Length: 461
Image (cartoon, rainbow, N blue to C red; front, side, top):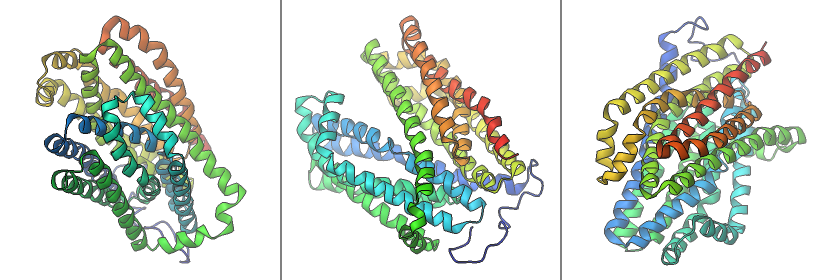
C-alpha cells in the first residue's frame, strides 16, 4: 500500500515488486490479479439478486402497477446515474497512476476532487429533479396508471443522487489502490441493506413502490458512511479533507486535467448508452417476443460483464500504477497477464452458453416464443464473450493510462459502424441480426482500441 500523507517517500513496496522479471509470470503475478478480480466478481454478482428480491417483494405485496413502476424507475436511475460513471473510472486511473508514483498527496487530492464533483453534480440533479421527472416519464412513455407509484419511488430515490455519485468516486479510489475487497464490502452493504429494508417497507409496512425507493435511499446513505469509514482506515480521509481546502487542488491546471479525463469519459458513456437504448428500440420494432428475448440476452451480457470487468479492474489498477511510474516493461507485463486471464474467463463463458444456453433460458422463462427467439440468437450469444473481452479489457488498460480521449473516439467509431450495420442486419435476420450488430459494435471497439494501443506504449518510451 502507498504511504499516508506526510510520510517520507520510499521505493515501490515489496508487494509491487513481487514480479522479479517483468514479462515473466510468477505466483505473485497471478495472486495480485486474482486479489483484485475475485472480490470484484463477488461484488458484481450480488447486484442482480437485489432486483430479484425487489420484484419478489412487490409481486407478493403490491400490484402490477407498482412492479411496472419499479422497472421504469430502475431504468431511469440507471441511465441518470451511470451517465456520471466517469466519477468511478476517472478516479481509478488518476489514483492508480499516483499510487505508482508513491504520491499519496496526489491520491488524497483525487479523492477530494471526485467527492466534491460528485456532490456538486448530485446537488444539481436535486435542483433539477422536476425537469428530470418530466423528461424521464416522457422518454419512457410511462402509462398513466403507473405514474403515481413511480412518483412515490422517484421522490425518495432522487434524494440519493449526491450519495451515489460520491460513492462512485470512493469506489474508483479503492480499485485504483488495488483494494477491491473494500469495493466488495461496499457493494454487499448496499445490496444486503437494500434488500432487507425493501422487504420491511414493502412486505411489513405495505409501502409499495415508495418503500423500494425509501429503502434504496437509506441503503445508499449507509453505504457512503461505510465507504468514508474504510477511507479513514486507510488514513486518507483527513488527508482528503485537507486537500479539499488546498489551493492546488482547485488550480487551473488541476481542474484542466480533471475535466480532460472526465469529459471524454462522459462522451464515451453517452455513446455507449445511446447504442444500448437503440438495441431495445430495434427489438421492440421487431415484436414483443423479440423485445422480451432481447432483455434476456441483455441479462446474459450483464452476467458476462461481471467476470470480464473484474480483470479490466485489475488492468486499471496494475497497469495504471506502472503507467504512472513510466515503467514500460511492467506496464506490458500487467497488460499481458490480465488480458490472458480475461481471455480464459471469456472462453469459459462461451463454452457455458454453447453447452447450456437453452437450459439456462428454460429456467428464466416458460414462454415458448421467447425461448425460441433466444435460441435463434444462441450462436451469437456463444461468440459474444470472445468478441467482447477485448473492448472490456482495453477499457481497463485505457482507464489505467487515463487515455480517455482515445476511449471516446474509438467508442464513437464503433457506434458509427453499429449504426450502419444494425438496420440491414435486423431487417434481414430479425433478433439474430440485431445481436450480430451488437457483436459488431463490441468487436469494433476492441479492434479500434487495439490499433491505438501502441501509442500508449510510445508515451512511455
